[in-house]
Image 1 (spheres, each protein chain N blue to C red):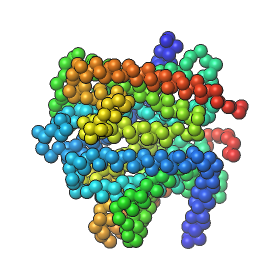
Image 2: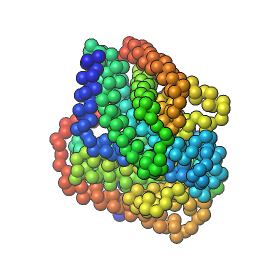
Image 3: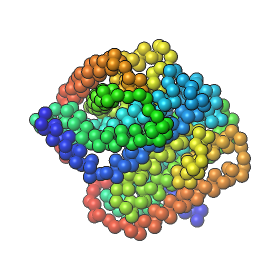
Image 4: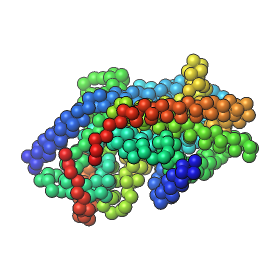
Length: 264
Length: 263
């Protein structure tokens, strides 16, 4: 099993490496995508500067905590999109029959499909995340925890994309579900959890698990709790297991569209 | 003009075939408004409080109007389409057609967004009443005039997005410029009225597109004033000419640089 995992990791690394090489063919476009994404995220901080001018504490968060929250939201998004961009358009892969390419390869179908493309601008999100970490004061334990939570949150983001994309095995036009779930995850992730109350808060820890992507990790970075951290890791494993199960369950229903394309 | 109306009709018919897409788009709009309403409710701890001259009722309706203008536009996807047209060379199909590409893109997009615009207005008004249970004072005339400014605002936004998309003639990918543009609109016009910014920024914003495509129509809705309406209308007409001029210039210059290698 260990050898199998090692092999899959090697495939992801090589796949990412070649995807970066491909994107770097146009250096100007690559760099501008990364740079503008950092700028894009930075501009949203203005919103919080205005809000903190009106109130010094929002839902128990100070300005520094908001920066950390933004870093976490951008980092988890960046992690999932940079390495597994295709997971966010899984629906179109299934509907137009492009999944055929991955079925004939002697590799893990899901892993090779979702890691076949990188999100260039997502690299900007990752860089932005660490800029925010530095601005809020970085220590080695904080850096390690932050990185761990980026991975767990990124895995949850990725799982939601796979689950919503896999609906295409059963329903037509489920690309809307894919797009909406992605929108929902980003929208809620960039606001302090404390402003949401009642049933909405429950939804944010279940159907739209933003709570495990940003709310809880930020809470843990501010007040560490080992038990909660272990729960967070367990939840991300649970989500990716569920996503993998759903994908392979749906794959049984997949039938090729005999799409003929040239892959160069 | 007739040919453009046909393009608009064709796109409208297409959007009617994809009603679930519109429904999910409305859901996204609902979520955006809900989140921002939660934030404002937190900021306005006292419901009678006035912040920079805005009550919670005015602030909520300001947000609803600006969100309707922003989300029904579908700018990100539209800009991607224009960029793709240029990068893939598809734009060449339009070179020998008896119409202007800029007007073609304008009417095509108007056709695809008109249904969502109407649905967003209906949902927005309903949402406003559910969330805040009151509305700034309105007359039939003021509502009609605000709708006129909203329509012109969308027109200017479409021209500006076409202009950003056409930058792809000169740079490889113009999408990042749209990200930045949309964030500026969101922060300086959608989330906050310009009164929330320091005086020196306010001065700049009053002459920027934000005044005509976001702040102006929303401000009129929450506090109608006929003189302000005239100012906004004049500014909008000037901006329509400027933004159309930029699009035509970029298209004329860009199409000369076009190099398509068969297919």
